[in-house]
Length: 153
Image (cartoon, rainbow, N blue to C red; front, side):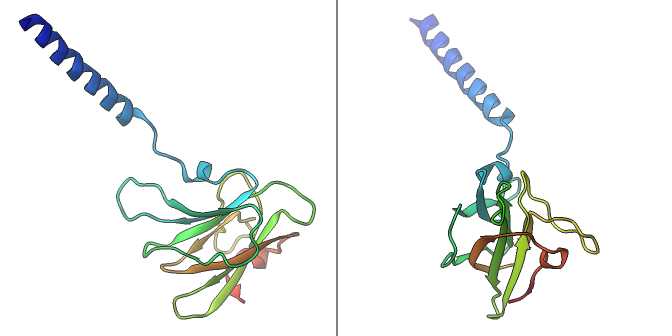
Protein backbone atom coordinates (compact mmCIF):
# COMPACT_ATOMS: atom_id res chain seq x y z
CA UNK A 1 0.00 0.00 0.00
CA UNK A 2 2.90 2.32 0.83
CA UNK A 3 4.28 1.91 -2.74
CA UNK A 4 0.85 2.54 -4.23
CA UNK A 5 0.53 5.77 -2.25
CA UNK A 6 3.99 6.97 -3.42
CA UNK A 7 3.18 5.99 -7.01
CA UNK A 8 -0.09 7.98 -6.90
CA UNK A 9 1.70 10.96 -5.35
CA UNK A 10 4.48 10.79 -7.97
CA UNK A 11 1.99 10.38 -10.81
CA UNK A 12 -0.06 13.30 -9.54
CA UNK A 13 3.03 15.52 -9.21
CA UNK A 14 4.27 14.44 -12.63
CA UNK A 15 0.91 15.23 -14.20
CA UNK A 16 0.84 18.63 -12.53
CA UNK A 17 4.34 19.40 -13.82
CA UNK A 18 3.42 18.23 -17.30
CA UNK A 19 0.32 20.42 -17.34
CA UNK A 20 2.28 23.37 -15.95
CA UNK A 21 4.95 22.82 -18.59
CA UNK A 22 2.36 22.74 -21.34
CA UNK A 23 0.72 25.86 -20.02
CA UNK A 24 4.00 27.74 -19.76
CA UNK A 25 5.06 26.63 -23.23
CA UNK A 26 1.81 27.73 -24.87
CA UNK A 27 2.27 30.97 -26.84
CA UNK A 28 0.38 34.05 -25.76
CA UNK A 29 -2.80 34.77 -27.69
CA UNK A 30 -2.29 37.05 -30.68
CA UNK A 31 -4.75 39.95 -30.77
CA UNK A 32 -4.76 39.90 -34.57
CA UNK A 33 -6.15 36.37 -34.65
CA UNK A 34 -8.90 37.48 -32.27
CA UNK A 35 -10.47 39.53 -35.09
CA UNK A 36 -11.95 37.06 -37.57
CA UNK A 37 -11.45 37.64 -41.28
CA UNK A 38 -13.98 40.05 -42.90
CA UNK A 39 -14.69 41.75 -39.57
CA UNK A 40 -13.68 44.97 -37.88
CA UNK A 41 -12.76 44.97 -34.20
CA UNK A 42 -12.10 47.34 -31.31
CA UNK A 43 -9.35 46.35 -28.87
CA UNK A 44 -8.57 47.84 -25.46
CA UNK A 45 -5.00 47.61 -24.13
CA UNK A 46 -4.46 45.76 -20.88
CA UNK A 47 -2.16 47.38 -18.32
CA UNK A 48 -1.21 44.01 -16.82
CA UNK A 49 2.22 42.75 -17.89
CA UNK A 50 2.38 40.09 -20.62
CA UNK A 51 -1.33 40.38 -21.40
CA UNK A 52 -2.57 40.92 -24.96
CA UNK A 53 -5.12 43.60 -25.80
CA UNK A 54 -8.71 42.58 -25.14
CA UNK A 55 -11.23 42.58 -28.00
CA UNK A 56 -14.22 44.57 -26.77
CA UNK A 57 -16.23 44.69 -30.00
CA UNK A 58 -16.49 42.82 -33.28
CA UNK A 59 -18.81 43.32 -36.22
CA UNK A 60 -18.89 42.59 -39.93
CA UNK A 61 -21.66 45.07 -40.73
CA UNK A 62 -22.59 47.43 -37.89
CA UNK A 63 -23.01 51.01 -39.06
CA UNK A 64 -24.10 52.83 -35.92
CA UNK A 65 -24.53 52.71 -32.17
CA UNK A 66 -21.29 50.89 -31.38
CA UNK A 67 -20.42 53.06 -28.35
CA UNK A 68 -17.47 51.02 -27.08
CA UNK A 69 -14.99 52.85 -24.86
CA UNK A 70 -11.39 51.73 -24.41
CA UNK A 71 -9.74 51.80 -21.01
CA UNK A 72 -7.16 54.12 -19.49
CA UNK A 73 -4.38 52.46 -21.51
CA UNK A 74 -6.10 53.18 -24.83
CA UNK A 75 -6.59 50.70 -27.65
CA UNK A 76 -7.12 50.48 -31.39
CA UNK A 77 -9.54 49.73 -34.21
CA UNK A 78 -8.53 47.11 -36.80
CA UNK A 79 -10.08 46.36 -40.22
CA UNK A 80 -9.58 42.66 -40.99
CA UNK A 81 -11.71 42.95 -44.13
CA UNK A 82 -11.17 41.41 -47.55
CA UNK A 83 -11.15 42.95 -51.01
CA UNK A 84 -14.69 43.87 -52.03
CA UNK A 85 -15.31 46.57 -54.62
CA UNK A 86 -16.56 49.74 -52.90
CA UNK A 87 -16.98 48.17 -49.46
CA UNK A 88 -13.66 46.95 -48.06
CA UNK A 89 -12.41 50.08 -46.31
CA UNK A 90 -13.73 51.17 -42.93
CA UNK A 91 -14.81 54.73 -42.05
CA UNK A 92 -14.50 54.99 -38.25
CA UNK A 93 -15.95 57.67 -35.97
CA UNK A 94 -14.87 58.24 -32.37
CA UNK A 95 -15.56 60.62 -29.49
CA UNK A 96 -12.83 61.93 -27.22
CA UNK A 97 -13.40 62.40 -23.47
CA UNK A 98 -13.77 66.18 -24.05
CA UNK A 99 -16.73 65.47 -26.37
CA UNK A 100 -15.00 66.35 -29.65
CA UNK A 101 -15.49 63.92 -32.53
CA UNK A 102 -12.95 62.52 -34.98
CA UNK A 103 -12.99 60.20 -37.98
CA UNK A 104 -10.52 58.09 -39.97
CA UNK A 105 -10.56 55.63 -42.86
CA UNK A 106 -8.81 52.25 -42.63
CA UNK A 107 -7.67 49.98 -45.44
CA UNK A 108 -8.19 46.24 -45.08
CA UNK A 109 -5.43 43.75 -44.34
CA UNK A 110 -4.43 40.49 -42.66
CA UNK A 111 -2.72 42.20 -39.71
CA UNK A 112 -2.83 45.57 -37.96
CA UNK A 113 -0.65 48.14 -39.73
CA UNK A 114 -0.52 51.54 -38.05
CA UNK A 115 0.27 54.68 -40.03
CA UNK A 116 3.78 55.99 -39.58
CA UNK A 117 4.04 59.77 -39.21
CA UNK A 118 5.12 61.41 -42.46
CA UNK A 119 4.43 58.37 -44.64
CA UNK A 120 1.61 57.23 -46.89
CA UNK A 121 1.26 53.84 -45.20
CA UNK A 122 -2.09 52.21 -45.96
CA UNK A 123 -3.13 51.77 -42.35
CA UNK A 124 -5.39 48.86 -41.41
CA UNK A 125 -5.52 49.93 -37.76
CA UNK A 126 -5.56 53.17 -35.80
CA UNK A 127 -4.75 53.92 -32.17
CA UNK A 128 -7.38 55.11 -29.69
CA UNK A 129 -6.20 57.29 -26.83
CA UNK A 130 -7.25 56.78 -23.22
CA UNK A 131 -11.02 56.55 -22.75
CA UNK A 132 -11.96 57.27 -26.40
CA UNK A 133 -15.31 55.87 -27.53
CA UNK A 134 -15.82 54.33 -30.97
CA UNK A 135 -19.31 55.55 -31.80
CA UNK A 136 -19.94 54.05 -35.25
CA UNK A 137 -18.41 52.92 -38.54
CA UNK A 138 -19.40 51.90 -42.03
CA UNK A 139 -17.84 50.07 -44.96
CA UNK A 140 -16.85 52.21 -47.93
CA UNK A 141 -14.57 52.48 -50.98
CA UNK A 142 -10.96 53.67 -51.17
CA UNK A 143 -9.29 55.89 -48.56
CA UNK A 144 -6.92 58.73 -49.36
CA UNK A 145 -3.61 58.91 -47.43
CA UNK A 146 -4.86 61.96 -45.50
CA UNK A 147 -7.84 59.93 -44.26
CA UNK A 148 -5.58 57.28 -42.63
CA UNK A 149 -5.31 59.44 -39.54
CA UNK A 150 -7.74 61.02 -37.11
CA UNK A 151 -9.38 64.12 -38.58
CA UNK A 152 -12.16 66.32 -37.15
CA UNK A 153 -15.59 64.82 -37.86
